[in-house]
Length: 179
Image 1 (cartoon, helix red, strand yellow):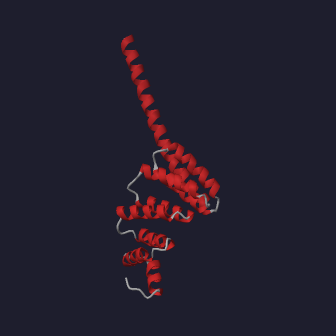
Image 2: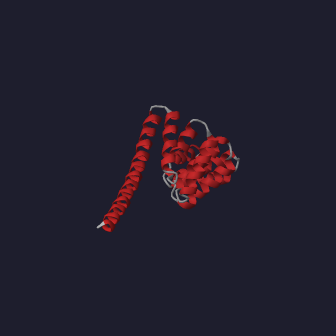
Image 3: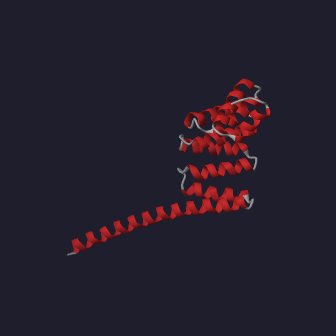
């Protein structure tokens, strides 16, 4: 009887421990979603620093989730903190190297810093992942143009226009160039 009681207690302890771990996991997932929504609200109100703090907490809860890191990178970019944005986009890319939007956004951060060479590399990677990304072609065209490479710029404006990018179409119409 004493042996059975000891086994039962151990089984109950294991079961309770497992339930506690599941509860903690679910709680952390809920916290991440809650913090992301709260950050969106803060950012919408123009409270970027508070939104960054919310996303920093979300990253602590879910360090392998690229979403809060990409969100924080976007906020850093809006705040003009391009080096921090690039660092967060880089980490998000490490976590999800198949997300073309991450390369597109990091490329934009590089462009805003004036580093068109790295921007072009990132836009090219975004195009490699999603050849139908009109924004990647458009942004790469702008980067080529900033470097003075009008031939490559024109090719990318035309590709973006063919994919339906209205900004590229407007630029080409203003220059009286077909796409």
